[in-house]
Length: 395
Image (cartoon, rainbow, N blue to C red):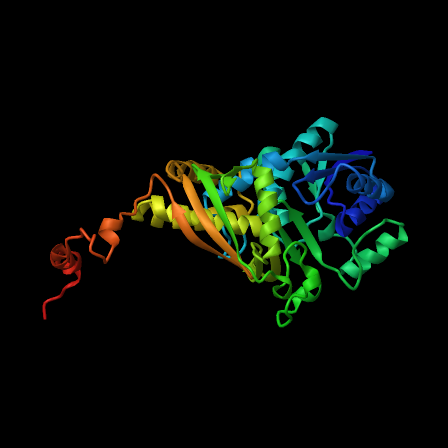
């Protein structure tokens, strides 16, 4: 039997894929990447393993990649201020190249000739997986069952799973497709495909609705060292614990929701909703600190880099030469991004309200309109004449 390593989530699609591949004569080896999607050391892991085995898998590998994911993927994206189309903080997109890397390593270990995934033919993740796999080992065959199998809807997949007694959580009444990791949650399908319909509250997983939010604001002061968050309210945290804490407190105040119609890589528009409390808070605080310590030309140029960086991540080009080159630029910009930013969390909003840094470029004596003002306003007339001179025409 030919061996295939499957990127397995434990959800509807990949559970059906295990059985589908087994029926095609493959020995299926499942790989589950723990990126902080809520897997535990007990029942959750046992349930996922049992589900994969029930579907026909010969082996199930589960690997905790949270530390690598945070340090090597989330933090570089945070430093780059990577946000796709102004809303999406790229949680799913950041996880795919890491999973693909470990799929290739497992395929080598198991001497498998193929790698399979559960991505659709109209989605972005197929590109992210396959481009990364092609970069790391172009000899591996890639199998994408959803692009070729007989099922035309998630409802048909549900019936298929029931036929083979594969335990699944999804129902016809709540047929959402969900991808979750510690950096955020992506939710699509079902009623969300109706653009005129407000997302129902049962679609959200970690953020509270406005009716459930506290009437009191929550303040949090976040401390950074060279662009990396280190403390909250002067208390040190590991990166994982810091993100977990901000997800909890941000979720309680409804921070981090996004409802967007985005431009997919394959050329279509799709409606997705996202939850990313910690990523939202950190990104806003990080940008605010940069506005204090970066000079104007560097700050403005970095905005262009951030846009391109987010596109490269979204497009599955994490290991591309351009993205790696941009990483070097971004890292150089973080030399003075140290200090703290206090944010106010209140009824779904996150607003920076105070900031400080020993590398601050703010000079109150030049900015003030009070009696401490030391700005020589008489210089302004000459500056304006010189600045506007290239644009003056003879009348």
